[in-house]
Length: 171
Figure: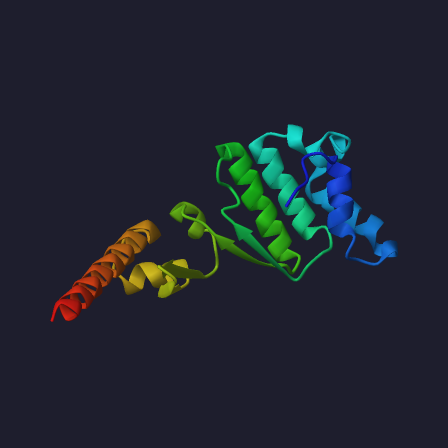
């Protein structure tokens, strides 16, 4: 979460606040090392940033206190292709530094960038494995093909179950 009426620096300070005061400055320097362009804009109000910059700031705020685990929900939605690439490079850098990152996305080309995948439909786990395992397991060419196949299967199962429920109620 970012606060649009606060500057980039103030947003980052709030994100880093959960660490001991002595470590906050170190954490901010690490954040600016990962996101150097944010340092150039640190007095700019967050609300004036473009969508891609807001996403970068949100990731910077989420990692400013150096957590072990970060959840990212649709992190590149509405972001231009260049910003999307930069965002993923940043995710990889954070992962190399030891942060576990859990990403939810509808973009299967992004899902293929992850080490492990879990497919969910209507709150149910319908597929699990590495991208290569998923593709091989379902004899598909791409992860997107697997997702579409599993989604269609789950929707058909749901329709069948709904039909049985309607028939049971009529009896």
